[in-house]
Image 1 (cartoon, helix red, strand yellow):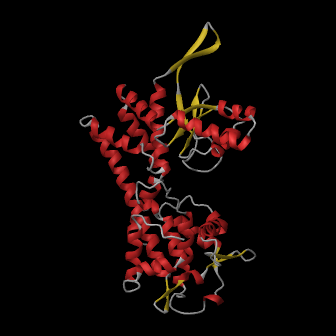
Image 2: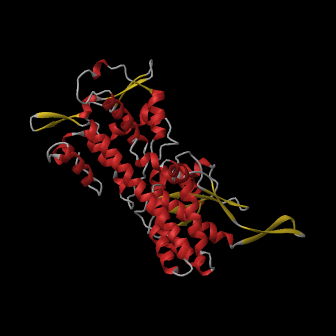
Image 3: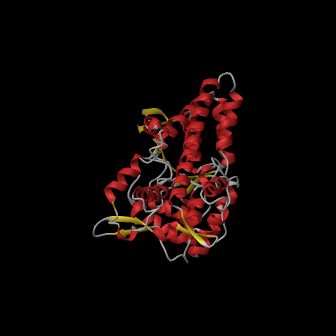
Length: 383
């Protein structure tokens, strides 16, 4: 496969150069595992669409670390090694920055499955696992790469690549949070800067989680100014503001709906795709209950809906079925619509509330409190 080039690729080559006398690009070309890490580190660029999920990075990291701790990168004998215990690997993963909520899926199957997807012709998978003893090994064959008629062991550079990536991610998140706080502090004196900051979060190439958080913050303030009157009888009506609730962590892939509005009971789903299959899956989750889709695109709402309809007709062919699905799309909110809504929120003087909500949700999403407690450990490079 062709090599993916992005901002962090140069850092990967720089690390490989240090361990190969300047042959980093050749090592990248000759190692499927390094190529996989290159693919998985696109999110080091803050503007990447790639989500900074770390489960697969850390599955590789803890196994390579175990390999190095045993000295197998300098001596033979890994084939005779009893393997690492799952409990030790799992505990180590959760000690790492951003790793406190990691599950066991990457170690057990997801890393191997994704690696196979990218490298279907490769005979080796990264993790070797013995289910009976619950022991794990890194596939040593993937740690060895040909370099000018000799083999080089990549365990140490792989460990350093993942460490460099995590430092880049932590730096990006710290910068983001610091900038958010700065905007809160100065928004009264410099509202233009606050506006530009939030506008920058509504781009097709922004991180998916940040887009979802920013969308929620803007929509929550927008609907808070809308009131309805309801009750059991015309004589006993209650005046109530619309309240938007975030129902879980962003991009959790947990089968849930992203936002719910009370008391109307509207459902909102945030997506970055115009794939009818994805929309209909979300609609089926709630038995075709109407859903508002917040889409990370500049395409017009009419264009998006038309694309969905055409895909539905191609897939289902039966007009009655297509009609039921299309009718379940209550509203489509694209980036231009979000910008218009944000303009309305600014007009009502609630721009600072949006920024504060973004900070609050970001701290929850990125485990900022938990990570701040580990800053010293992180800086002391126990990783």
